[in-house]
Image (tube, rainbow, N blue to C red; front, top):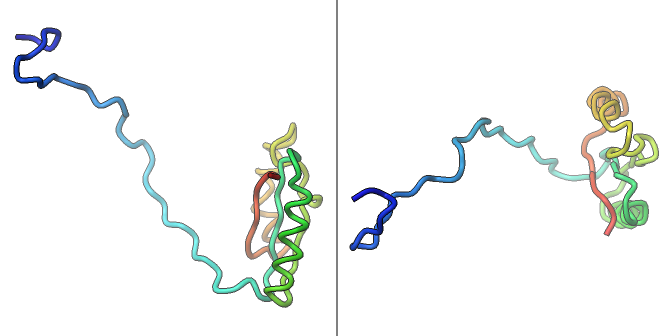
Length: 109
């Protein structure tokens, strides 16, 4: 009996629909112990109300972590616009130059 015919025992030949994993797992970056005194970059795709979300996060985090500093999303431009490739290509060097310790990337709610 071939796979096209139904088997009397209810078992059928099947294929796994996913291909083998093409990339290797990478270790995640070490998390910061605290945000106290750290510099946080803000990224936004200029959709919805991300400007308001970043403002609220900044206010809340400044209350919880003394000395935390922010590099505004205005510094980086639209991370999902027509200049996206250039912005992202330059990002590692810019983050290093600005002394950034962490980043918040997102869109509004």
